[in-house]
Length: 281
Image 1 (cartoon, helix red, strand yellow):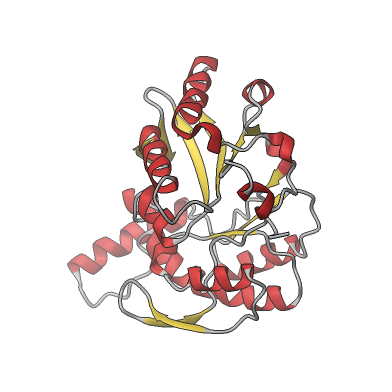
Image 2 (cartoon, rainbow, N blue to C red):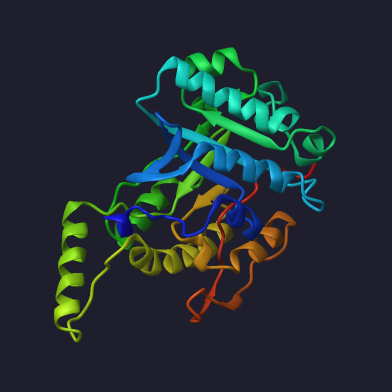
């Protein structure tokens, strides 16, 4: 089952270094830890690595979005502990909601604010001015199991005309049948090596879906779909996306980037993980 729970293969620090600027976060209590099917890293790990990354020379202008959109078994006390950790580790880098969702990069750069925290707990949001409610960010869950259905679902969400932040989820959701079939094929391929394999992990699914997603982005951009934030699984396997994000944020024309994936295969794609929703004006 672990193969179906791992959506990113590296820690927070490595994700940040590779260019990821939006983190989809789900937290459970006792102790506070991030979860995605299975328990993953402790919350403290993100706090430490994000603080250290932002304090590193050369990263003074980096802006990171933290989207705490699911909580499991969290009491009011647990929320106070989590919010306290955010305040303790990130301090004046936390962006108050008073700046407004349409704040520009230059406006942020003129302050100490570098982290925007979206938080799906009403009482916590009402008590802390640096927590942004889920009403300012939309992240429709496609809940589909193949690339064709995903394309149709994402097409239906565009063009984006929403006020606030908008997340385009370029991921499929493995269901019980897909996982069971994958486990069965893995066993068969071990017994009979020539057996044709299907997806045996979330990584294998991403290797099918993500290249197509990155191709779709070309057309969406040409159609002026107002793409905001795009997420995909196993983004670290597609290192060229950072180049394109930088180019697009500078207003450059879309082009093709040819660079090897992490497994050594070449893929000509336009890879995008995070499209900056904040303008430079």
